[in-house]
Image (cartoon, rainbow, N blue to C red; front, side, top):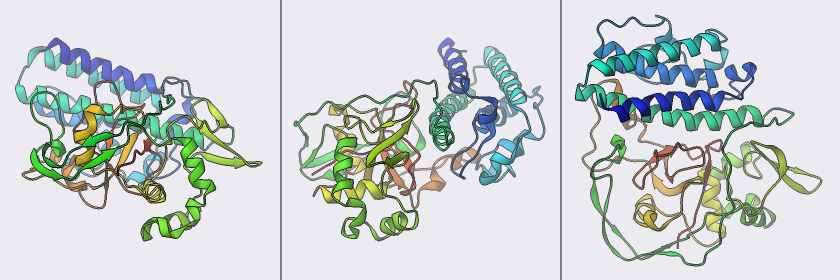
Length: 383
């Protein structure tokens, strides 16, 4: 077994628990909306992934921790059997948090024991997928914990390490010259299947902002009536903000004429120097329209990425989430990981303050519905 794989596996497992370490026991089972899964569920689901796709496949002596857990903690893998529906995850007060942590310890010990006697390349590949899968859930944990706490009347503090930094203004826009470029993951290092199928694209002359849009700029958009001017919005986006009475990013509140927002340190005045976060694609598009610019396509973003200082927020692009040429799905349940979601979603590029170290890369394709606001997403402009 490669020592580095064992080390990364164990450190990843610990990191998930560290994210939850400052939570009260009551925080672990809450599900305010369907998109926000309880922290306890994330801890169990990422464990079930290793049990289902590693241990039951490659260790014929393994005994599952509980026969019920596959039903309770499968997410969307139809090939892996029946499951609790997503909106119902918060109804599960059992198993307890203590039982879930015991489940994690049991599975982690079993995976390490297996790796010490088996170096099957396919096994190592699936463990690598499992590590990256759990890292994705670590970021989702940050989103969901913030939503759970950010909807409490007292806006409690969370003792974590997810803090934005002020944007450093620059007027040196990144230049992309007209031409043909290669898009997609090539070479060594981990990548997801949706990054595969490297191909050529033709790009026009483009400039991409070196800066993320800030809270200060967003306040100007609000004050200029951006949320009231239907001319700036897609029809679907306009309907969305009207139906949900949206007048500002998620977690923003206006009190006595001043704008406040919740971050992990509590409710405080909006800092105009920080990048704006918690906006939907609809809002990002409308802001770009208001500025007389646009969002970069995901291909433009990827070509500019080596010159961009990214990693504070995921960045909405102007691209729908579609398969690359020659994209193929893995057989079985793992083929459901990305491919079946390639419709009605939009691509985000970059990384955020909640993205685990080493998990981001220039070719990474994140994707969410255009209405999603609880993720750590902002934007940069193109022209």
